[in-house]
Length: 217
Image (cartoon, rainbow, N blue to C red; front, side, top):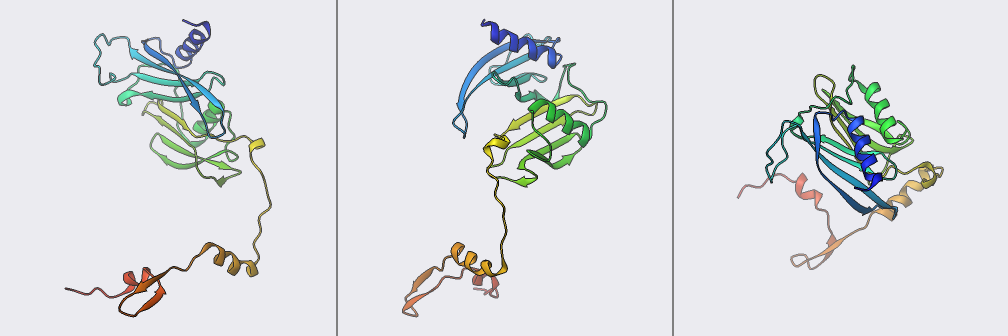
């Protein structure tokens, strides 16, 4: 095994407290992101130590499926199958927005309010969305964190690109009331359709059928 890969495997085992697990499989994947950067990801499957038989179609409950960027050493996803964990590494004494947000910042290198923000919070579940200075962007990246009732990490997923400040072009935005009509004309287009009954072209207004009274057959 390559020394660099072994170091990442050992790092993963220590960070997530996988002493009661063994590494079942590991693979390298190559991907090109939207910025045309080449990204290499190490994907690992860790089985609980008590699992001795493997189902070819399904991972056993408690399996840790972990992906890590081999260059940045940031984790892209951590999933404990079936919402069950035997790991002893990542857990939270208090599970709330502030604690989880701080942990996400440490794990991703992102800044809350500048590059991501909270959009959904439920019992032990947090969903963050990509932003730039609290402004939504598209396509948007998402970060999810799930914990069990004991505060143990069950899921971490970082899907998106979250551009750094140097990739963002800032520009002052202002609209005068006098510009609104012209902007509307640029963004709207009149569509005309032929009518055999009326013998001509007429504006297509599909919303009218929703406003008309219902006619029974």
